[in-house]
Length: 77
Image 1 (cartoon, rainbow, N blue to C red):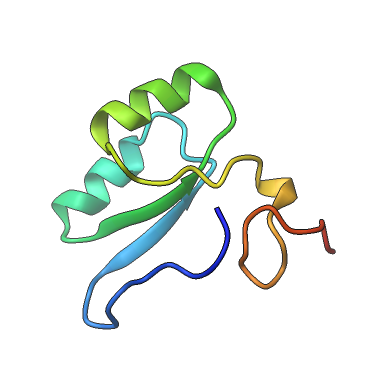
Image 2: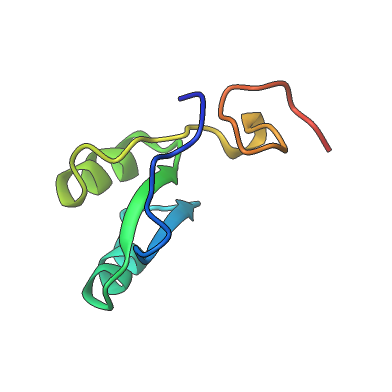
């Protein structure tokens, strides 16, 4: 995924890092938040997460995210 996420400033949104199967995200959803993206690399966890949140983009390995927020960029520290 590259570029910025299109999200209204009026929406309660979050990005889930180290998402696992999405248990924390389910709680946030019940509190009114929308998961707009997540980062997870475990295949089983991804399959469960995608069951609960179809269509939410996976940013992949968090170590490959660029400091400016764009996915797939050069690793920065």
